[in-house]
Image (cartoon, rainbow, N blue to C red; front, side):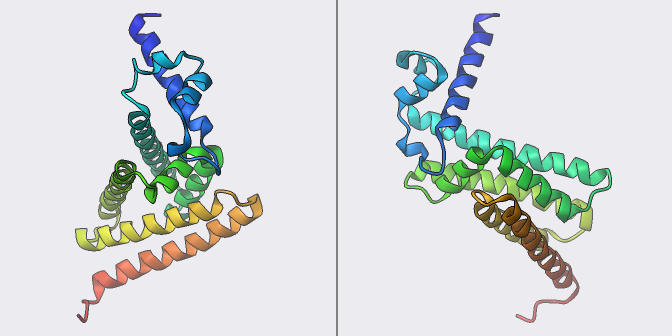
Length: 203
């Protein structure tokens, strides 16, 4: 293994160690550099070869969480292309992600309203990326104009994130109920957007 490969592997270990320390009780701000180093199996001084400080690591975690979520929804669109219903497939894929990566989603959820302005801005940026991708996808599949497609995407992202927060610590049965409810809510949003495209706004 080359030195560069080893460096990348160690950096990956630090990121995964930090994610593993997050749970329903702990946020980014409560995790120490020494804890992360210990969980990653490295000396605390080695941490600084990869990140300037714990805040830089936190921003990297937010970026990774957002990227993981966007990649997941791209996978959902592949499933949709092979014959799955858009809303059913998207919500089911999202719920699978939360079950398998609850700390990743918990990070986005918690830091969205956290005390760190930098983390809040980073999460908002990731949500915006997610919304832009959904807007583009909606335009390409429905032909809706940008303003309506963007409003629809924003509403759908907010609904799904809210459902994800509810499903995070729910039982399997409760998660099914949450999924069914948000699917119906998303259908309302889609129908409303299609209707708005046909009937001019009276305002």
